[in-house]
Amino acid sequence: MTTVLVTGGGGYIGSVLAEMLLDAGYCVRILDRFFFGRQLLADLEGRDGLSLLRHDTRYVDDSCFDGVDAVVDLAGISNDPACDLDPKITEEVNLGGSRRVSQMAKRAGVTRYVYSSSCSIYGAAADATVSEESPKAPVSLYAKTKILAEEDLLKLQDDAFTVTVLRNATVYGLSRRMRFDLVINMMTLHAYKNRKIYVVGGGKQWRPLVHVRDVARAFLTVLETPRDQVGGEAFNVGSNEQDYQVYQIAQMVRDAVPHTDVVVVPDDPDKRSYRVDFSKIRERLGFQVQTSPYEGIVE
Image 1 (cartoon, rainbow, N blue to C red):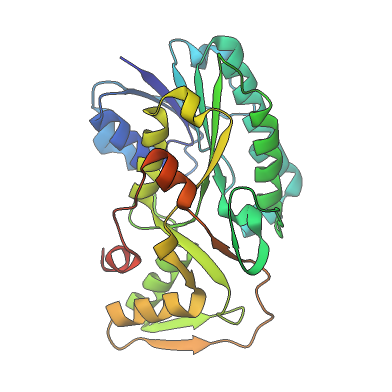
Image 2 (spheres, one colour; image 1 turned 90 degrees about the vertical axis):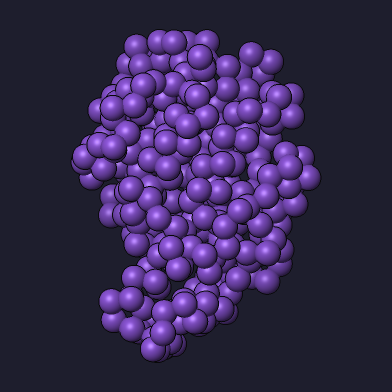
């Protein structure tokens, strides 16, 4: 039975992916600091094939790779404000941690490594539609660490060690470990609790969207695709039909949550604007999303 090590497996995406991997018949080893508690995985802990390792990617030793066939690397400090609190720690975790885990995995004989990156690396792309080959224009430390980690990881790609990078759109939807700093989740929360949504940064900035279960499905798809089709490749994860401007997202939330007001707050224009092309993952891997933003809001 194939064993997958999921770093950050106790997080927003990781906890969804862990369940999906178990359902697909994989053994899953979660490596996580569990800052938000391991009780969030209580309903999974009794399942055959799951093991939990409370550790840090900066310090874990080689033993965590015993019997591991593939690594999905989701660990990291995962939003701009958190990353800006202590840039040194952010670089140690988001860049140093991934470097260390990938090098250890390769030495241990792991054959596949799938890295969770972000479409935020395209940064200030204005109204241009960007693909995997487009120039990167990061405007945050988070995005900069993702770019550097991608570059380091792809250098490790060879016939024995398959490296694939998945650049996720802005994720939304329910998870055991919820995040309410993501645009749809945050707007839905404010609409439900306060019947008011605040749109900052002008609202005209573009955001690509993808449901958390679809992100997990993309990782599973890569793990199950022949290595020669995904080795050394980067794929944007999302759908061309889910590129929206922020004010359009607010309108979708307002439509789903009755009696909600949308307030455009005077603010500096948001420099992060990227409209993303997701053709590659659809054409190369046959991957298509299954959930719409409206369905995610209602959920």
